[in-house]
Image 1 (tube, rainbow, N blue to C red):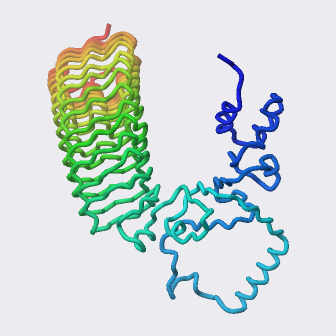
Image 2 (cartoon, one colour; image 1 turned 135 degrees about the vertical axis):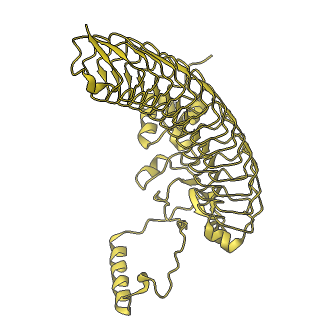
Amino acid sequence: MSNHLNDFNYLIVAKFFESIQDFVNLESVCKKFKSMMEKFKYNPIPLTLTTKRYFPNIEILNVYEKDDETFGNEIVHKEATENNNCGDSDECCHNYNDSDDEDNKEKQQEENKEEPTTPKIVFKAVNVWFGVTYSTFKNNDNPTIHYKYITYTKDDQEKYGNEVPQEVVSLGDDCFGSNKDIKTFQVTQGMTSLGYYGFRGCDNLSQIVFTNRVKMIEGMCFQDCCKLEQIKLPKGLQYLGPLCFEKCNNLKEIEIPDTVTYIGVDCFGSCINLTRVKLPENVSILPELCFHECIKMTGITLPKGVKYIGNECFADCTSLNTVFISENVLSIGRECFKQCLSLSSIKIPNSVTSIKKSCFLECNNLTKVELSNKIKTLSTACFNNCVSLVNIEIPNGVSDIKDDCFNMCKSLTEIDVPSSVINIGQTCFAGCEKLMKVSLAVGLYHLGAGCFVKCKNLSVINIPSSLDSISEGTFHKCKNLKRVVVPKSVKGCDFECFDRDTTAIINI
């Protein structure tokens, strides 16, 4: 098998070249490719008046971008804009007179004198690869001009109607936004993308049929489509934009194909009847607010590809009772499972190194938590107001337990703080009414103010010699804490730190 490039291989490699210098470099290092550019019948890269000489025999001109040289061929490429017709009251129509017109004409004539006209080169065909509107395509009367990327815009829809022509490749932004007449929609065979706000607020849209050529659905495309109950996403889909299906109140289930690699922020937020979701294997990030307020969703399984779960991803999913987190997840975001009122247990795999602030805030039925042994910090208010949490094992390796971490965990009866913990934050265990026993290991340096305030059943706690000081009010309203042994090395320890029912502070 030959390791040398032949002519066919050259053409394949040339597809990845970005500049004329790439071609020149290849021809300069291999004599057999010296005249290869002369064999091209089309330009593989944009050309200028200077670089055209390298491709003397092209018959088809490819125009890749709007600013590319067209060699005198007139290509209409009106940018799709909305509301570009000004009325009598519009500011752009004011202060205009004949003298302004004459001045503009003279200025234009001067500019034309300075810019020499490009001699026209006739090609068999001109392929236009940048996006144009359907109106531009429709109004083209030059048979040699071929538009390859046609967008159906809002203006096109108003002019030509709701039925999208087969030539269309892309649906423009807000194309059918707030259209009350659309009930079903069939994506055309050539369409590859749907634009921002494409069907937003289409109150009567109940069905959409995709083809497998669709790769991208932009942000807010189906937002507020309140009659959309089921949707079968195409197998080739790669991108779901932000708020894509947000507030689709009747959407009941969705299966996201494994080809999808990106899901945008708040993609399915507030889909209040969504009960079932199948996530793709190749998504690495579940973004913030992705499923927040999906109040009927009962379970979710995170695929192995997911590494990061964003802020408030499942917040306020009040019926969510089963969550399987894969072994590859590294971080769980702020308020991720906040107010998941039906969640009773959760296992955080050992791959997780970070759980952010208020992650399980007010999970009222959470009774059991198994934490990762790689977590170094338990964040602020992480389990705040988890009133049913009975027991939790803090892994040896955690060094910092932040403020309010277990505040108002009213069912917590016992806590064992390992020797790796250096800091326990303010009001960390405040209001843990059933907490009876606390074991603080040597190594703890700081105990935050009000740490155990209102732990009315706390009766046993050991104060380690490594502790620097005890703040005023740390054990206020701990009515059952009668006797405390405090090492002499601990500063500021007196009766102001304890409840008035504490009758003995023994310094050793």
